[in-house]
Image (cartoon, rainbow, N blue to C red; front, top):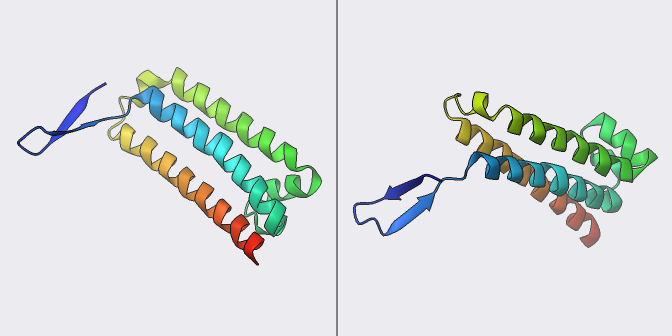
Length: 122
């Protein structure tokens, strides 16, 4: 794991996440977090709020399929990313790109959770 130091004193040290850590984070956030928060939001606010028409149809038909589909897709993406590690690490700013995808997933999870909580409160 590589380290970056901020400031001249070297007191504060920030470790950069490794490739495997970033891929694992992506799988957890998008696979588990997005699936569970989507189900939570749909259960309390209805399936009409889902932007993806395929997921909206699955939510109406069988909500458990949403979890299975989202987790399967992200697991596949995670395996492909791990297999293509040598290629991805040659791309400039690969760490920033993966961090942006994880951060976007976290925003989606928070948004879904907010929608579900707002519906519960209403």
